[in-house]
Length: 205
Image (cartoon, rainbow, N blue to C red; front, side, top):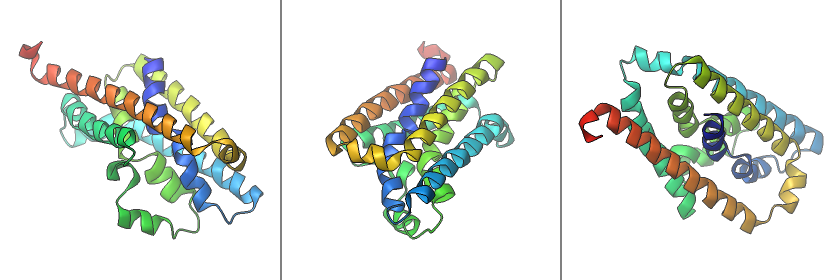
């Protein structure tokens, strides 16, 4: 479960995918402020993700949504994001629409908005966290929490050393990494949809 959770969360919260936007939004920052902003972005992302992990199932219950129905709907959302990463076109469900991105670029403090939300902890991350911990058992929660902690730690390190990494990370390598993460995310999305469909329609199994 830990490996699956880590792969899914790393694919959707990929620090190297968020890195170009972070570098663009902090281009005028002094090095110390840029590093501080990177750490705050990771902290905000961790807090948001932890809240979703703990309260996600309760939200579904409040709206009387079955976790298997959410698996199907969430799998479709993740599949769209994964295909967008594969095609290099991106997805408005993950990065926002053109007008939303234009508004995001005008923010002075970018740590919480738009970096932590919705760039890193957006609809895709929210869906992934709820589905991964959907079984509700302690083992699943602990595995997802551990995977989340590792991904957020990596995120903090990448953003802290953003200027150094960005200097050595070629555009070609970024494209290859994005395509690979998109394929992994699409496969996980299909797995989630199949599990949800089989649970809703057990006769198909």
